[in-house]
Amino acid sequence: MRRILFPIIALFILASCDGEKEIIMKEDQPFTFSVEIDTVTIDFKDRFYFMEIYLATATVSPDKKFLYNLNISAPNLEIIDLDKLELIEIEPMEKEGPKGIGPVVFGISITQQNELVVEGWNEYRVFDSLRTEMKTIKIGPNHLKGDEMEEGERFEYYPVVSDDGSHLYAIYKEDAGMKLGETKGLALVDLVNSRIRKIPIPELNSLKQFIIQNQYGFEKGESSYIAKSKNNLIVSTSAFNEAFVFDMINDTLIHKVFHSQLTSEAKKGNSTNESSSEEDRNATFKERSKEVKFGKFLYDEQNEKFWRFSYDQDRMIGDSIVLKTVLTIFDSDLNQLHEEKVGYDYSYYQSFFKDGMLYSYINLNDEMAFVRVKPHYQEF
Image 1: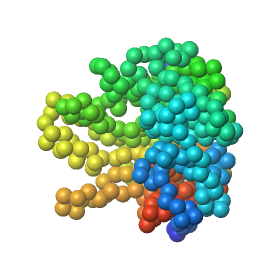
Image 2: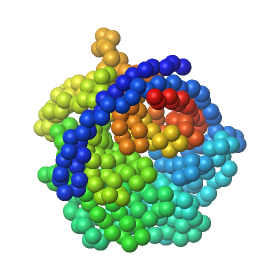
Image 3: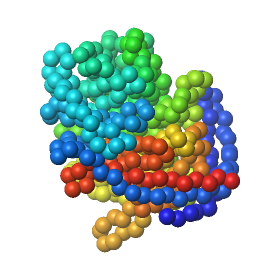
């Protein structure tokens, strides 16, 4: 455990949806921070849990009391009590048919009413609390009312579903044609009335410069993330030290640009195009791995703080890259409070805050386990 006193200056840009911008500077007060770390395992009652995809098809209930892990092979839904740290139920599911989860599953969400939302390919299947009824919401041209989804547009994986299950929030992008890989903006979907509103974020198109495409058309680029806190939606990327905050109450979009003293502010870009050789692409991948990478925003409801882990080159040992992990802490309005180099990390697929602690999934000798990081704050 350690304590660091570290003043931070945050720079951000305020922009309403009609394009007006205002530059604001804010200097925060000194901030001390320390953590306690432990590891807990889940009692699966002599059963094996579904671990083939690192809990990518798992989610936490809105009250953070239960973890739902969808076994897409069985299929069934494993329900874990996070207070008791044990498996309490396995719900049988169907693969096909009128109540099937579908042939492809990318992720799931659970609502306050215990409804299950299953993310498939350009569709979302919503199961009632008893799993006896299911409705399918298609995403694409002519499927939703409101703003038109153009041909080739799709949602990025891992959207956010509102706690009451009435809305879905996602990043939308281009997945075909000359605009392949163009990240366009934020989509707000009314799941009750099948209506969509699109909020363009032109700055996200800068991610296209990082795409590396092979001769078969498969692409690799930078990630975009979406998170939610109270009445705000946060869109960010792995390439730039910034975030776009949509205030759903005031209908405004805020572009916040942060500053780090411990990492670079952005990746360099200038990727290899699809006509390059495999050797050139591999060389680009290697160079790209040395550059900064920003993680997703994680919200701590109890302490009203956001955490974000970032990675940048620390040093080289021969041909091997040694990365450093940097934790940045923000308040609930995404004003930057603190950053420091840390010796712990989070799980990309399954990390969440519960009772003021960060839970990050690990597989511990074929047992489901979580590393818990409990922060202690003192703000002056």
